[in-house]
Image (cartoon, rainbow, N blue to C red):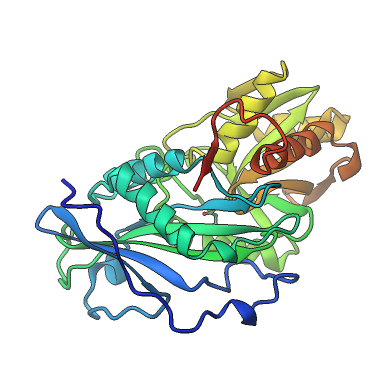
Length: 354
Ligand code: COI
């Protein structure tokens, strides 16, 4: 149980904000002035504090370093058209953090702690929320094991932190992806659905091999047969085939993306035919060959809607239709932007105002 929601604040002496070129923000390299920290010990979260963004000091034996007991989230804050700071669907991220935490034997972060910590941090650093097109303040909450113990067991001490960084586009151009049929991201019963740090570490080597071949990202396939599409790199994947929006069904091997859910919700609301089901490589390749594959795109917080321009499979590259012709993904991207900016009705109550 939570002791108290009192958050102490130690502010920076000099803000770094004037050193930032907000016209040219790289993704994930510039951090705002402050960060939030809470420590977990003896079964409770305590010592809630906001401090200047600075390096951490931890024991070399900290179990997170050795065994990767760590989970994280990603969400974004925007300035709406009235200049107000808003966050997109933070309650959904708070819930997903705890799903991931449960799988990794990490204690729950109470939703009110998540939301209040984020709110107070953003209230302090709201000038860091950029307001140009395709920019946002990326919010990265994370929880990791802190015991200095070399044996394998769930840690007794944890740290929950939130850092934020102004960001531009994650992918600066439409992406080329390769369908991966040798390496595996996640197997049934594993940690694929969790936003666990190690899932990303395990993906690096296969992605590096694909990058050497000129692709930006991989499309992961199922571990047992490598026949069905799962997700792509840092995002969920969706296709429009014969005017139907098709995406792999959420399962224990796929991250339950919040952008994914938002896209599916809007599509259904517009009366589009939507299918969440197994999607075979064959179906996608056949559709690319016979011209019924109208669109393919990734959906994720960092990536937002990332158009896929080319899909590689078994040495053959399939070129997809021009981006301007992609009716659905262009429309859904615009619709989500309009909701975030307060220019369209927030019918599904996705917007959290500070
Ligand atoms: C996100 O989309 O928020 C992610 O966490 C993906 C990535 C930057 C690791």
